[in-house]
Length: 329
Image (cartoon, rainbow, N blue to C red; front, side, top):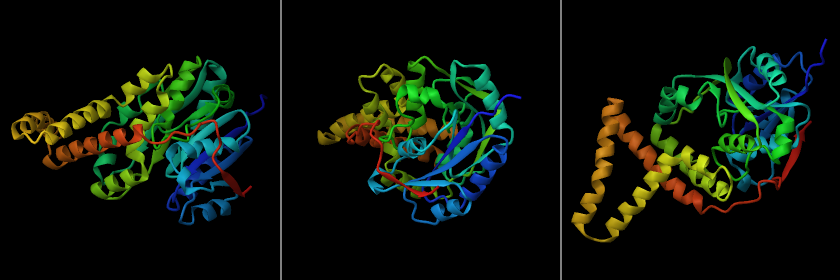
């Protein structure tokens, strides 16, 4: 009988006390036949996420500087304490679906040119616009087949990550899996999303505009600009631009609109405003809802403004590990 590969699991968390126990239980159930290490990589949660994870008997590591908090640092922190053959990436609000690990391992063992594999995603009923929109576009966000990146994580070949230097970019407040995928593709690997269940996801329950405010203050919306800045001069810059092209084009329009406003010419500003009004009307028609249409426009405006902010956000060497400590092992 072939020896089972060793799997390290990185669960990135920030105040995930509502779900972290279910996340750990779902993973442990699927890894019972594999040598493994479950790592909760915590970004200084202010609730009892860390204690709940400790009580589950898993390894818990934590950042020591709140200024390091971002989506990209989470799995990189987990990777620094990982070992073995494969890395399974999960968030603290996900539950691993039964059978994924077995099929993902079998695929990677049979297809050495592939660095990572993921599966299909199930989302609960969302209450705010962002997650409603994400659920509506779920097949576009998580497309089946070969892809240039695997949104939502997946099972990765650890040797491939070692080849490209780091797992996820500690500078990114989002799009960390996109940047990871582009670097793996550039290194000659492939990625695939199989038609098998991977995880179910618990949506955020904040109202739409509170969610917008939270995403802005956390830096999440500056991620498109961060992705462009971190990719500048790299072979995958054009692919990065394509990922955030909607925000980039709209950001350029916002700059032109601002310039028109500064002209203090009402006619110039009125003409410059026409594309925005036409776009808002289009989104209202597409969504068949005045509220959803306007929320879609506001969401894009905020994301595009965030892109401008992200371009100027300081960048640290992604190969330099963040300061961290072991809470429980």
